[in-house]
Length: 288
Image (cartoon, rainbow, N blue to C red; front, side):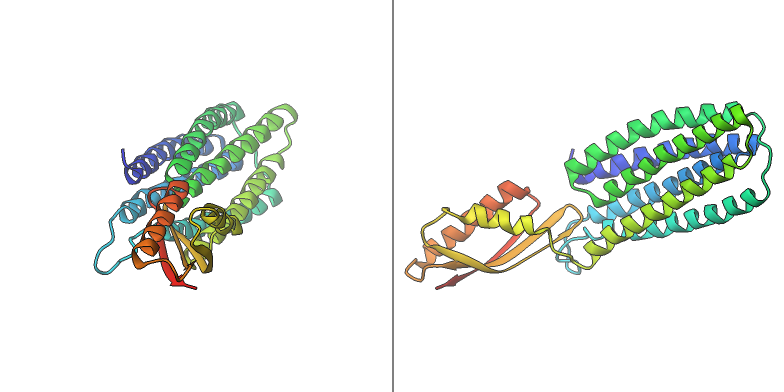
């Protein structure tokens, strides 16, 4: 299965899982009146929207380069991340306001046991889904799947907080626990949205790879060919699962044209062996 196909399958699995969790949590939240469970349901509803967006944008990102998009469509993943971040932030802010209102006017929760049960089941499902999405994100180097996995990390936390609040409510009967738990969940959701937005923005603005990427290239070139005299103007960026590296390779002017070409092609092969076959390497060879 190709990396692009794996991304789409993973996003589709996440979407289907989120739909089931949203329906279960919403039903229990309505039946019990628990705002913490409702907050968890809203979080799952955002997961539905975000995973659905991922499935859509990953299909776009999988399209090969064409006449109008010579560098491919990889940035569609980052665009998906921006939209997801906005959705998450809006939902989080709504929950903060709702929690503050309920804190001012606490309400009784009926059948907290049902809320505890759905939170426990959702916790187990979310743990399994996060492990799966993180594995696929690493295997395919997908920002969109990494963002999706982060959504379900928040799901884990929301389920823990909601379940703990209902357990304490069941034991001590404090009505303020439920809205406080929902506010805690909402604040974490907003913070998560800011992090996703920052990462997606970095990719859309062509932020360079960490300094370690240039150091790796320098190490790979050392001792590769005696004619190499160094390199200049190193630049890098990432678009979806594709890494772009470009620099000027300085070669001894005594080397023939054929030898310079051979050195350049060898350097490209060595870099792709290290960074993966989807790495686009552009080298301008200069005699010195």
